[in-house]
Image (cartoon, rainbow, N blue to C red):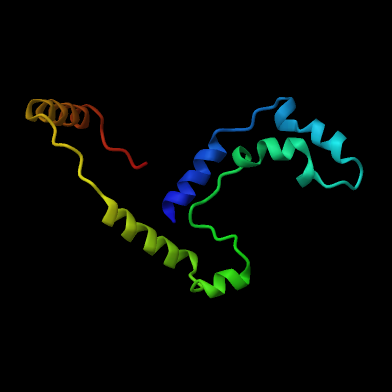
Length: 118
């Protein structure tokens, strides 16, 4: 659930571009007063990238959700991390010389930068 939240925050921190596409004036013109924005060409062209789609959200109908076990978000997250662990493949080992250099760099940086409360 934390990874989903971080993904949402990452998307939020990308900011909002202020351009013709983001403002969607073509959608306003196409839908017209009292119209349906979901059916506009602008919405169709942008719906996949406009928002962050959390992996753990369940947008199925109540009936589908009930038939497939009624799992809440915590249960879906539990299933997901167990699957992630089951699918894990360790990376190839580092060259020992590269590992020593990386460890030395980390040690040097830790000594150079004091701990902070944040």
